[in-house]
Image (cartoon, rainbow, N blue to C red; front, side, top):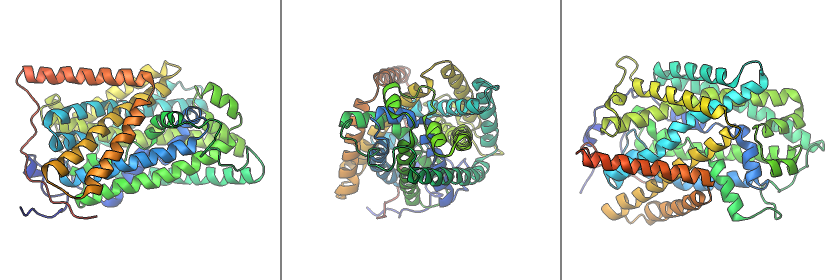
Amino acid sequence: MTQPPDGPATAGLEQFGYRQELSRSLSFADLLIYGLIFMVPIAPFGIFGSVYSGSGGMVALAYLVGMVAMMFTALSYAQMVRAFPMAGSVYSYAGRGIAAPVGFLAGWVILLDYVLVPGLLYLVAGVAMNSLVPAVPVWLWLVAFVAVNTVVNYLGIQMTARVNRVMLAAELIVLVIFLVVGVVALLDGKGAGFSWSPVFNSGTFSWSVVFGAVSIAVLSFLGFDGISMLAEESRVEARRIGRAMVGALVLAGTLFVVQTWVAALLVPDAPGLLADGDPEGTAFYDAARAAGGGWLAGLTALATAIAWGFANSLVAQAATSRLLYAMARDRQMPAFLARINPRHKVPANATLLVAAVSLALGLAMAARDDGISLLSTLVNFGAMTAFLALHVAVVIHYVVRRGSRDWLRHLVVPVIGFLILLYVVINAKVAAQVLGFVWLGLGLVVLAVFYATGRRPVLAGLGAPPEEESP
């Protein structure tokens, strides 16, 4: 059967049973920048201590393995976004690639990621700002960040894209400053001097330790998948959306490995960090202080606060609202979440709901000593579990249904990606596993209620997807 070529993302929504309601205005560069901002080029600043202690000091290795693991997932995303160029991410891909009920469960599970992410980001930012201005409590910083981001997102995706460009430039400037000062400090004899220990330490190495740390480190990579949420707001070809995801992942991953390698060699009390962890979340700032003094520690803390509390949480709120919008228009979430603001062309109600939940969650976790660490593992568990469904969807959609013989992209890559993520999920913290499976169980109950009340998940008309081209 002859199918139309993989064309612009601007075409084809109607064949899937949807109307174009969101504003198509994003370029390839906008998508790439969005993904980088979502992942945050300086993301390790905020969770460096947790990854360091969890990996036995091999923090650069944890990020390297995390990048490789996520690369298989990014390649699977690239295949599915070309088949189904629409909002909803893994919810849409699993629902259309496997079956609608599976899509609902995948969307439900990844909600654990998307709903918790903004709250985590606001909390990290609030803690960082509180370390700079102790007179202002964490909760007040939380309120301020939520309010500003909600206004920007409400004003439309173009406003979000413009802010993203400015924030990315600022983050990269701070990162370059840290790397230059850090390398000079190491050359001057500060810290532990150059070594390969952040990549491999025979005294602490074990795969269970590394993958346990990866379950935290992958938090920094979550965001490349958020690019797929903007498929209905992109004006580029669907296959280029996949390229933006892969490109953002490679660029961010390289930056993560380099900066954590340098920071690991500058940690002032490595044995203490390994033994006691980083409950206050200041390990990276301590390393910066060892390299350049208080001004560098303050600069990295301020950059973390702005990057996590404003730039990253801004795009996270946008992505989460699009997921809720996609599920709501399929009657798998309350209908009011599918309403679009006619002037700004954004899912306004979903945006406001995400803001309210993020604020409540951030305030609740701020009262816990382990709030950041707990939220990090919970967020990752939800994402990893949903990504498992994504890999299965690639195999079923392409190999089983369409008879593809592209064994590399449609079988080998998703199977390897599935196995890597399964190992990460198995090695995740017990608390994350318990809450993750409780959340999944709750989703099964909701799904059962849907069937009992005659509202079983049904996606809008399943038209023939565009034919994929070789990249």
